[in-house]
Image (cartoon, rainbow over all chains, first blue to last red; front, side, top):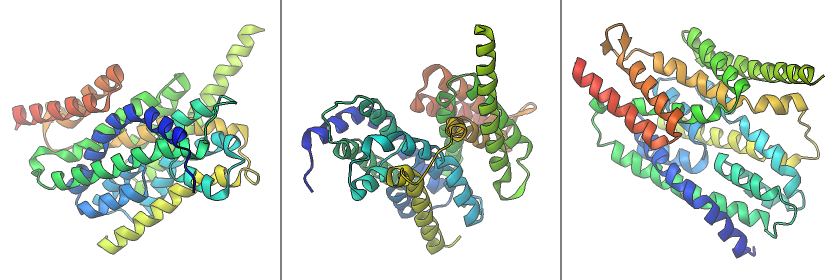
Length: 236
Length: 107
């Protein structure tokens, strides 16, 4: 395999500033997994293979509370559904690449990589090997993510429970939630999802999360449609 | 769950996540995403994350400040920091410091 070095370097350079944000996230993921009772090796293996922070944090909390495996898997799918959107958005830009190259790009298509790649691939003549640009984005992030998870897990094992490090998990989700609310329909989605999940928190199998999330998605989509209808009527 | 069970669970999580990420990259010719579904997917992050955060913050830790749990207070302050700074580290640091401070004060 011939790697187009300029493309790889361009990706790595674009990703560099985001590594600073990913590192503490990885440390906290490792530490909170140990606080929830997972072995350091296991959470490191998880970061290496799953490579999806929010889904991992949710899974860690569920495993810690003794949830069934299918509940963990359903929650993983729910949280990672957004990646289907990334995949669909980038697919036209990489149609000419081999199946193996597209699979490699898929493995690395995390939030940060998608955000940066969608900016670059939007231009028609970027002169990039898109596979190697995505590898340049994804590999440094993967190494940082796996490495900081391992460090966090081994350091976290030394932290006494009185430090309440398990609280790091809701804090991380909060830090992800707030920037994800970009407009009014997004706020409607969050309020509906959060409110319903809170009301249904007593339901078994993490069903409160599922119902709340689906209702929130529907409410956000409906709010966007309503907003559009109003805008069209306002113009008429 | 036993450790081998956790390992299998992690493998299954990895495969599912890869399937979601690679879906359209590998099979764009055969898959179709209706416009309504495409719009709905943009609301997955706020809806799902809020559905995780709200019950987690409302869960009582046992240490209360009057009628409210200290974790809820710490969570609300951290939410404010997240909104103003959009910085993960600042959100985490402030949330933990408020939690420790209140736990120390009350406990």
